[in-house]
Image (cartoon, rainbow, N blue to C red; front, side, top):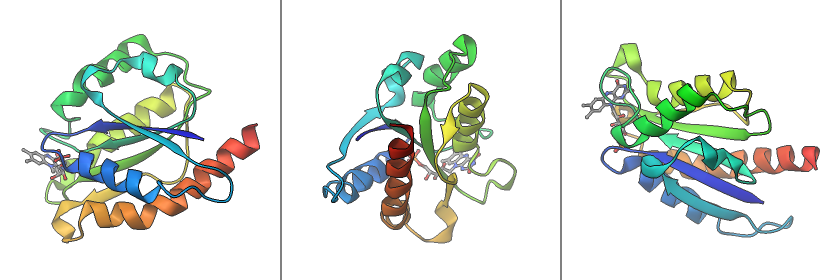
Length: 160
Ligand SMILES: Cc1cc2nc3c(=O)[nH]c(=O)nc-3n(C[C@H](O)[C@H](O)[C@H](O)COP(=O)(O)O)c2cc1C
């Protein structure tokens, strides 16, 4: 199974989460290995969704509840081109801080809402990491990663 992680980040925390998930998913399970690739969103456009496999959006939140700078062009491209993503399945690991109560985790939410509008189907619940909780996002990722991978494998098995 192929998994592509798409990372939106300002100061690298989301990238640490992606690295942790790559480690967690490195062990091939009984049902075969997982091929994981992490791409920073910087140079992406909507054509990345032509790839095979499942996607995981890992993104933080900045400004007034905006996606990080390196995710802006990608997000705007999706919004402008509105490709049909009905064959795309994805998860969302959002990073934010509850101190920003009005816009908590809006980066992940924005991607989730947009992908949903374009027909893509989410696997599992959207994670909303809270930097003010004192729990490291890598720890949350480690705990969450195995369960989500199982759901992703199920989704692939059902559709093949
Ligand atoms: C200037 C600034 C603005 C932020 N705005 C928000 C926000 O609106 N909502 C939110 O949930 N988190 C907000 N955050 C918190 C970050 O999303 C959070 O610290 C995240 O873990 C950073 O991840 P990154 O290093 O991958 O960018 C903001 C942080 C900074 C420094």
